[in-house]
Every structure is written in structure tokens, then in C-alpha cells.
Length: 466
Image (cartoon, rainbow, N blue to C red; front, side, top):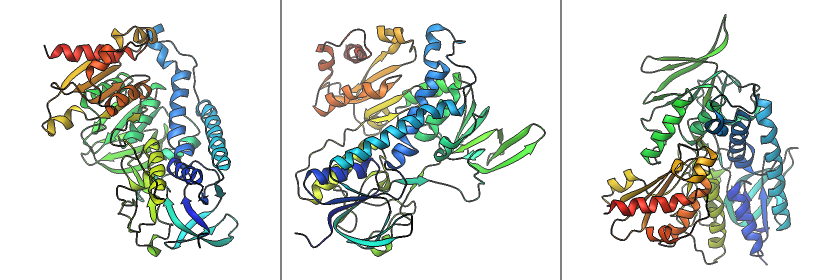
């Protein structure tokens, strides 16, 4: 029997923490998980992934956006959509997901502690619950899975309504008529396109000159076109020098000043310039771990920190900051901690970006292949040439495959359109198994489905080789 209270102690109940705790329990280890929020699930379930994706679906349905291409531009399911309408479905899904996570942890025998956990030393965790009760526990191994907080500029007067962050979305009282989104990363781009389809005049501002720089340019160009079709305005390559609320005879507004001299007046401003690791109150000074200036923790390939018995997983370690990869990181960290064999194909993981329309990508894009000096060819399939695309009215969707012109092996798959985040897994599986374009050509896909895009794109690409 170990001299420690636990074999593993997990701090944080987001996707990485959940998977780590459950994996440890399945190995027969004594495991506890501490969560200082009132509910489990972390940012993923409560303020991030689940709320934004559910709100997107609610906005798509209530606005009739998906049906406009079929029944005409004036078609809408519901007029005068309110934030209450969007919150109704979102809150339901959040509650359900919280219950699912709690039951999974309970079924696997994970001890759940509703308290804040901080390090007294590398193997001792100080716990403090909401009543102020304190105690200390010890653990042979510790996994940090505390996630991130929204980055805020102390000079900006956030009020949660006119000037707010993505964490405030669920408490907004009304849908503004106009909105500026400061920060065109994944979160900013998602909310910009969601509010745009609700009729909000959106202005998307970012210091970078390219939207979603890690995504294939052909895909982002198509996304920008769709945002502009929904009356969105892009202000890329612009730096914000100030954000302030003001009031005049027309009501309450927000003024955003740009260093170029431009001023943008809008009804509301969403500030989304990234996230910082939620490590400030972890007591890391009592360990050998030193977070970077943005609170992120450095780890090795096994997710070990500077202290080999302390691991970190999920958004707190930075890129790629996806719920899916966080889960795998938690599982892999536990297997390594207890000397179990590990096998993963994390180098081939998909991105899912829930803009309107959806984007999903796996593997390298054209810019990366060109920069690396790797020869490639492209095969494309437009959704509007696929029967399923005509049925659903998705005339803008696109699937493109990048492949080696000699071996025909798949180098990357990039998709824009509804269902992209599901469709990408076909390409991911073929890539992971070393498949070639011939696999898609010789495979029979259900008809009519969007999966047929793979066959069409494969024929297109092979035909380009002459």
C-alpha cells in the first residue's frame, strides 16, 4: 500500500481532467478529482465549447438560415429572436452534459471534491471548499487540468453587457443590432458568424492580416465571403487602441478606436483576444513548475512538467487547445504515470471550427506544403455538384484533398460546409492508415450523402495528373 492518500490527484474537471481520472480508475488506482466551480465540466461544458456550439445550432434553426437557400432569402422560422430563445436550448444541453460527466465519474469510482486545490509541495494538495474548510491530502502523481480564463485588458471597462467576453455570452440580456468582435481567432470568428446570421451587423477586428492563419487559405477566403454576404465587415491588420462605452441621444453605444485613426461605433463589443492559463492560484511556487507569461505550463511528450510526478494536460499547456486532444492527453498522461503502454496518433488530429458555415481540417494545408517544399496535387468537390448538397441547399460547401502526386497518399483534407466536422473523420481515418486516393475512388459511398465528395474530389485530383 502506498504512503500517499491517492495514487492520482486531478485538479480540474474539464475534458482532460475527466479522461485522466477515469483512466486511472480503470487501472484500479485510487483517484480523486478537485473542481472549485459549483459544477463539473470546466470551460468546455459551462462557458466554452458546448454553449457556443449549441447556441450556433439554435441560431441556425430559429433564423431558418439553413433553409434560405432552398426556400428563398426571406424564409425564416421565427421572427424577433431573443437571447432567451438561444439560452433555452443552450442551458438544457449544459445541464445534461454536467449530469453525464458527473455520472461517468461516479460510475468509475472517482472521488469528487468540490473545492479549490493548490500545491503545498509537489505531493501535497491543500483543499479549501466554499465554506472555508481546509485540509491537506497527498498524492503520488498529480495532473493539472485547470484550463484557461479569458484574457482581459485592465484598461477596458467590461460590464458583461455592452463590453463583454465569450464567458459572458450566456448572461447577455438582448441581441444587439450591431456588434464589434475584437479578436478573429476561433472563438471570435465563431461568434461573429453566429450573430451575423441573426441579422446583427458584425465588424470583425484583428491585428493579424489573415483570418484563422492555420486554416487553408482557400477555405478562409470562402468563409470571409460568406460573412460579407451576411453584412459582416472585416478589419484585419488593425490594432485596437481603446474601447469605451458612451451614451448620446440615440442610446448607449461602444466606441472602438483603432491605431490607424479609424473609429467604430457599435451597440456592443465582444473582446476575444485569447485565453490565459488558470494557474495563478495553483501554488506553483511551491513546486518546480514555472508557467510562461500567459500562465501556460510547459510539458514534454509525456505531458510531464518540470516535476516528473506532476503532469499537465488540456488548454493549460496551450496548442492545440481542443477538447478532443485534451481528452487524449489526459489518458496518455495517466498511462505514462503508471507505466502502461501508450499508443496514439495525435499527430493526425482534426480541427473543428463551428463558424457558419463549419470548417474542419486535418493534415497539412497548401501554404504549409509549399513552405516545406513538398510536392502536392489538389482534388476538389463542391457540395453543389453532389446530390445531397442540392437537397440541403448548401451551395457554398467545398471539400478538398491534398495528396502526393507520386504515391497518391493523402497529405491533408480541408472542408467548408455544414457537417464538415463529422465528414472530416473519413479523411482522418484514411490518412492514419496510410491510405491513398485510390481508396476513395474504389469505395462505395451511400447515395445521396456528402461523403460522396471524397470520391468526386479523388477523381478530380487524379484527373489533374493527366
